[in-house]
Figure (cartoon, rainbow, N blue to C red):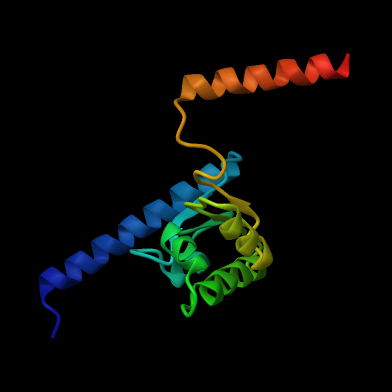
Length: 144
């Protein structure tokens, strides 16, 4: 039998979920895109995909790391996530991509985007700004 404390906790949890859902919808209405991070681990649940207005699923790096190893099910898990995301009209992004082999496998399994050391080590915000400005300058010079 549930105790009164359990009932209060369950009620409060539902209140928090309702508030979170409302906040996410408000953000989305403002044009903010929402991603479910570290999908497949921890608290990321399939029910969240149905409840919350996610635009993107970020595939946890633990699945990406296992792609190169033979005899595991990492390919099947990645394919299942990308197929599910596609069916729900969500984008996919794989975290922790470190080499071309992982990138190629992810492409073959239907993953739309990647992040990780293959592209760049972490960069401070001011350095990113400088990199973007330099890239724009180079494109303008080429166009002239």
